[in-house]
Length: 572
Image (cartoon, rainbow, N blue to C red; front, side, top):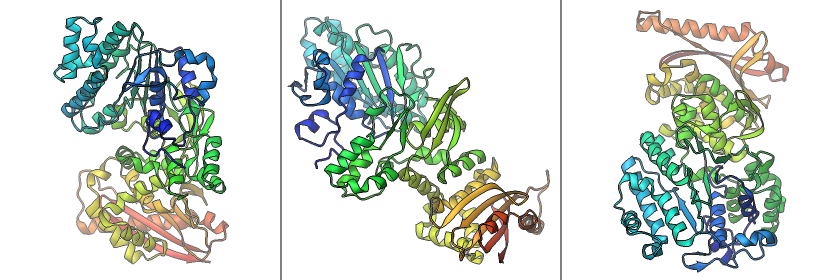
């Protein structure tokens, strides 16, 4: 098999006879689409760039001076004879912002200026066109030479469509890939307002009420809210991961994956592949991650993360680590394979992420492919989605992110030994290492706003590698006996320890600072209360009902970076 790994140019794939999963009926859907401007949002590496390349080669008569005729022979769209009249009939403006990832606006602006200059160079024949005035040719030359000011650059897309129409007397088609990459970079690096202002003007000029435009198709990962970017663009139709239209054209269906595995003589691995890379629900269609599938086959059937390694995932890491206690509770349930219901807003407002808006964070996770919606319904308050982690690949990513909170300073070997000390009840080794984390890795600022959320997040981090483990089950805030315990690590082996934890925060009296000895005494008293509560409220009842006989009870009292840990072991 010849798989197109890293190759997203349609003509190259066809000419060089790469294995091609035929999605050409997407062209038919675009032609039939009544909206003049279409935005399709999907996770990265789900075929957006290839599909736009396919549209470009279909609608353009030639690309890079090479005729496109014959490229679609034998493909599904060629059997739809009524659509043949559209092939090669339009000027096509195709641009991508995928590489605009600069850390400041000036650099991003220069990169965009270069993109538009190269785009104008593709149509350099327009400089000699008798249909353009001398003023228009002067504008053209300034964009080409990268000498235009910002207002002219903001109008450069609109003006190019005008020039093409004047020359060809045919409305052009505009294709824009990864429109949101510069905006994401602006949010991460602190120039969000500047980049939003630029693109609001750029898209408004090029797409809003542009009567010279036949159709525009944009792709990206997120839909940036209409208020901040697409203000006034009333004829924009958006198709997200929750939309049934176009759902089967981005990602691989079960039939497509089965066909690929048969060709690779790996059909016996379908169930494993499904477990690892399936589970993306796009409205009514369940899809596989295409990037992972082709890499899995190329690597000879090696089951490992592929898609999650194509990004640094920095924003995801930050949002998880700084989230609230309720968010961490929900996130922990997801790690255990459970689902949850959340209100989702498909319009992403980046400032809401900064404010810790949980609906915005869940929405980002869903749109970016880190979660999937197994069901959804529209309500007056928003779209209510049933969310879950789609597959093993993403689950492993989350576990790794949480492990890295602790292993980044000490290494994975240290982390494994640290966790083993807890699981074997070696608290003489565990306690000083926990103190090391508290003193050297974490700042008081980490804990100041929501100390309980921090301590709960700490436990999630400590046990990250146990989620999905065949040996242990992680549970938190569960009813057992006559109350709800804070945290439990329940062994599936009767010979191994199960662990019940109870946390209590110690607060100094308002307006007073306790001496070292008094704080030590208060921490110890509070830890005793926590440990006693485990027995008094029979928190071990659930464990004992399972026939498990070895239980480690831990009472933890925290105050800032200080803590006291008391424990006892019971065996029956």
